[in-house]
Length: 352
Length: 263
Image 1: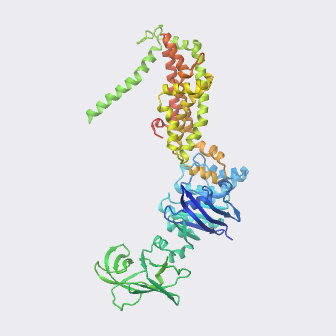
Image 2: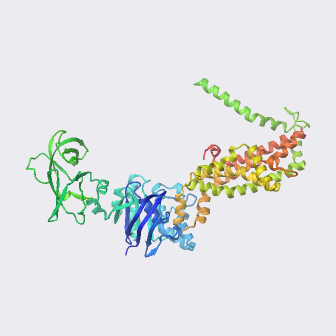
Image 3: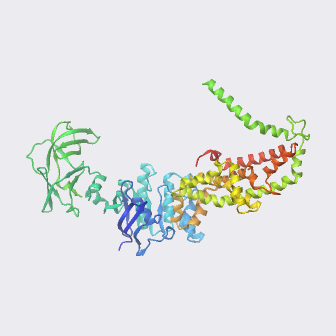
């Protein structure tokens, strides 16, 4: 049974729905990311779980209990903020000890637990410093320590790394993953940074307009997006809208405007309702070798050729629209050249 | 360029002369040994400073002024801090209007405010003089408390409040343990600014005072009407010194920009 369940939850501001009939299940011990463009409802979902927002409708179940009306301060969830939100008037020690003291833990135990958790985030010896005397990365680690020390039932991150510089971001996300796995704590992580989400999560939920479009492990989403939105979001920018589709032998045959394509059925993704086929620019091939015009081949003209450093990027104009291809070559094709596009059938992903 | 700077310098100098000149002259005349205000003074004496403490009405009205300003300050804090908090923290309908209403005592001429309060509050409800004075001064101070506190809350990251809640603190506990310590200097500045406004107020107080009950500035006016000796000059110098000290503390607390910043 799932540890956390949102059941038909709706959130609205001024009659505008941010979330409507929203559902999600999260398993114990997992790190799940909510990923999506701004305004997709990911932060709203997180704040709802935290208790900062109240649902208009629906239920929030946690560990089998109804948490829908439980106030924030009774939930025992740790929350890590984008702005760190450390208490500026308190030392690192007092910041971390804050939650423990509210729980009436004895000062001797507070001391040992604060020291222990500061070691976990590699900040031993910083107890007496004040937040303004710390770097961004150190502040964020204090914020994580403060959320962890209360031994929360759930850990929530709201874009925790977006105020850090690129290198630190990578270090910190490794750190967050390490701590999360070490303590085996169920975690919900919100970010708009794909790489961040894909690299640290057990499961990624991609959200769009208040709905989870796909909830899967990162590798699967990356390879087999379910919808056009997700495909575009993770870098598939070539699409074929096909007219009809017939299935046989684990393959689909797609017909459009006199062309035929065959696409391999990917594990658990071939949707009966699929209308489009998505391809990454890295997976298409541009060639001049003339062969018989068979399936998965499309004649076209190079419209734009751009040098990208490691590879060339071509925009190829065909009678099914423009396609973008990245290809490594020694002698590049020129604009205006007549070419053929090859579509490897295992790289054609059917999407809604 | 050079010419323009010189013109500006002259202008600035004139402004200072007109602003500070009278204060300097008052300060000199306060040391006049004779019985009539004179500039330049004909000698040096502490005589009129001593006299301040011999005029019973000054002592009595000083007490009244202190009482009204301090207790009114407390009332204005109790009303103003929550109001400033709500105005900074939440978005709600009519927020702009409410803001304007809270600030209005600064914008409406004191005479109008005072007269309106006398006619529609004091007389209508037949309030005792002290109650009237207290209400009047609370109203004088409220906009300053709200503006200064709201101004210090504008730099406050409300995520900190949420952090406190998520760590298990209740709302009231969060306010006292997390919000208040972080706007403490703003609140102290608000108290001092409001105190100065109230303590020096004449135009509203004049309607609230009555037989036997007066504030120090009103008493000073009355005194000047009947006496020409330099006592008032001496008392003015003392008040200036107190004001300067308070201003210095405010400046230390949060910078004088809080007077000019629009909230």
